[in-house]
Length: 304
Image 1 (cartoon, rainbow, N blue to C red):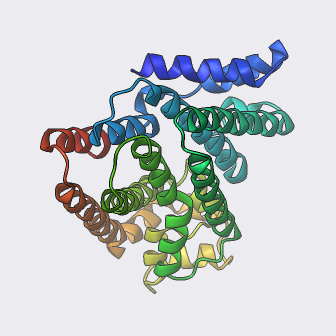
Image 2: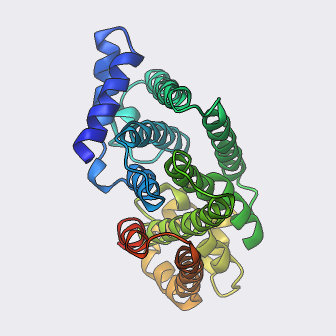
């Protein structure tokens, strides 16, 4: 399946650029990703199968979404100055932005073609635009760095992350005979899984804080907000209020790690992750579809 998705992405790239040098750059970006560990296309396909879909057209839909998410990854890395070894971080920034736009419009052209061929009358493109614009708005608010409360974190995490998983599930079920009730349940399920993934990623980045950009850029993720609320976390609070430099924080790594463990922030976030995950499982169990397909969806999309 992954081979066929990759072939579809490559075909879209061939149609998205005229010059061979440009195609080479797009191919380089495509080849740099480990597609065997990407959940986006798998989410599209498993949602499609969950509701009884069986047509090979879903390969092209999944591939188009993967290209769109690759463009999103490039934008994230350029904004966060993360993954310095990625080819879009080592080539001139202007070329990376140009390639990112080609991936976006190439993906949208492919989704537009599927929309027309399957009689959706523009509904899929409209929904795609809505979700992508919502994600960009969430990313903008995240980059502003104005998060002060856990509620603000949840709102932004939903906008920039959970909505993208909702889009992936939508790209699976929109081609099937899904009911209005099932759509609403699937949307809520996707939102809960998206929040699970975002907080889980924030926890992973916290554990590797010297390598990742979140701490360096003073991003107030959920575990960081919890640590900042604890007056005992003096190093964290001093770093975020500007009285402690990055180099000074890095030199105090052992002390900061001790503060992190003592704060209980990691454990608290793990509880919240389980809460979102359990909500998703309950919604899946309540869906009126084949039990075997539900279990397959859970094992392929949720379980590590």
